Length: 568
Image (cartoon, rainbow, N blue to C red; front, top):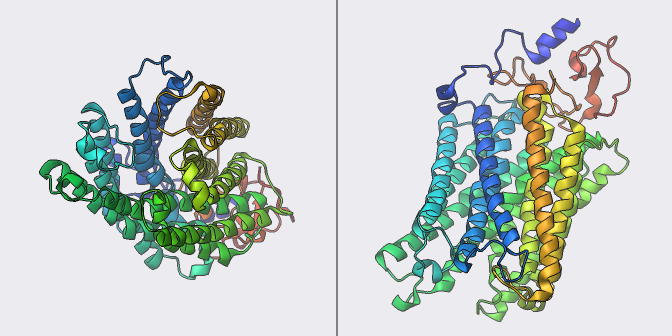
């Protein structure tokens, strides 16, 4: 087959518009039903939310540089609002939707060999619900702020004069956005896989999104009902959680954590799926233990519903229930460990390319490993009594949620950026950004483990002088981390305008999304994708004339080398 014919067969004809050039203009984006554009709009939105929440975090860390809080001049009430808004915006507007709604929206249909998601209009509605929900969180900022902590714990959330109703209504709307996305993904995976793609020919990223969708659909309504009850409590005084009227404030905690602990896996499961793809592609090696990784995603999703009580060991619940929740919490660590050991086994003797996506993937394994291991201390009853509500919990949560989600998100962005925009980023600067994120993150949160083990409580605006060095190291790390995040986004945005053009498959990846052009055409594929092993890298060979990997089915034996070079 001639080179021009290969190009047309693989990447479409030159007169076929891609999704970026198709119907330009604000309205064409605002009213689009194209999953790729919706994914990019999500990406812009969640990135803006993350940067805003990051600013609040830097304000908090600056305030804690000195133990009396005199550096910033924030009052204790203002400090409470800073860390509350940081947590609420980061959790509800960034971490939960970032990978499923942004990367998932863009990649999932293409990995399935489909033209779009099952319900394109519902997909667009999900995005606008996210916009409105985030808007209510910002309205709370302008109407008395929010000072309850991101968990909205009663009875204080009933009594405070801050904008709890606006914030909880915003989280309620964001919950509907999450549910609709989950329904869409579940139906899309079940009904729109390309002919010949069985369950065990799906990339592991799709397994993680499928498991996440189950959690979104089953757990999120509990949060929605709980937040509506809290709004009713504040506006009508119905006495559900308020002990003055015979309510039970601990009941709120049960409802909240029945959602929010499974929501931890909404945050981290998609990131685990991204890492499975990055490890396999950039080590150019078949994923080790495919079925174990796939089923571990489902196991995490199901076991996640049974461990909410470990957040409440000090709440007065029975000793028997504490023991049961502790045991199940240890159990849920097993499928997570299965993934980590399988990733390490995949790396063993692989042809590893230490490019930006792989660097972020390795960072994820380290940070998630630390977060998971420190979780065992909090699952143990006697140590949790000492560590509860200290900076140890803050550090553990951030290692799992922020360290895991952030590194997986950036790893996925750098991996799929050439696919999304047809431009390659500066890999050297990308690796520098990863180094800054990794070093800054560890410098921020490792000292907090030490502080927490020595009794430093979380959420305090002032503290004993003995903790000053730890807080100062943590503050320095936060600014290094912020610099790394800004550099990573700058490298990606710069690549859109000035990066080297990419046409097809620069990594030798075997999943279906790489059988389309880069960026994809409006309908994703200009030819019927070849459904094959998603980790069968031996079926892809490098064509120097196309400057891309091509499937052997379309390759001219006379124009490709015998050996597949390492993807850098």
